[in-house]
Length: 53
Image (spheres, rainbow, N blue to C red):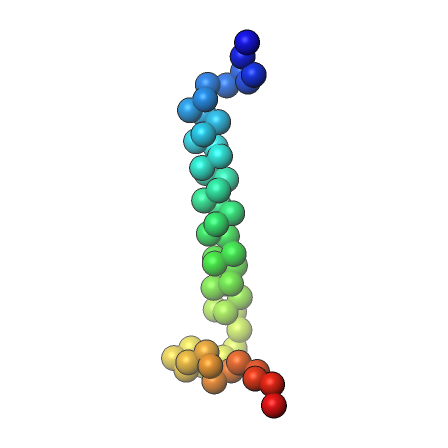
């Protein structure tokens, strides 16, 4: 009995591709947003973080 019409290596390849996209997408989006912001690039991020009083 065959559960899927695709060979198992195709399913594993697509699963790994989806896993890679889901792993790296947040980092890419975050870096894109940081690049679009108008802040001082060489300054450390701690200078811009809002700390509670």
